[in-house]
Image (cartoon, rainbow, N blue to C red; front, side, top):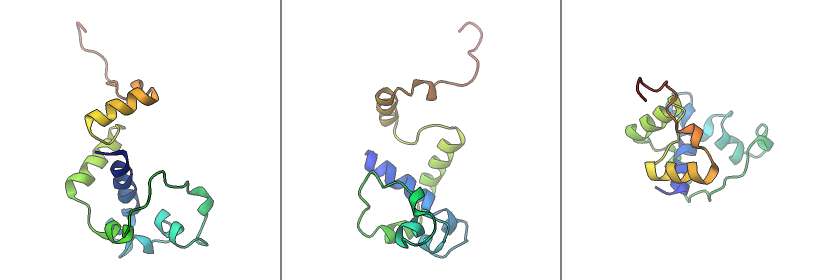
Length: 115
């Protein structure tokens, strides 16, 4: 899994929130979303959005508005609930080592007796 794919998957998850909740028919129609702010430059506080670190794919809106796989959504939600990184184990290991994030992957629970 590449960093570009992980980034786009997570952005897509966030930008589909209103659509997934039934608040908008298409993700870009929700006026308080980042995709709306990017598309309609005069809509809201655009200065709050950072530039993407990856290129926006061609036909992004078409891809954005297609349903995400249930398993993908569940994996992202699990990572968020557990405050864990989203991605393959090898990607997480590399990111932890590169950015010095060892404390983010430690088990938060007490060690068992005899540990």
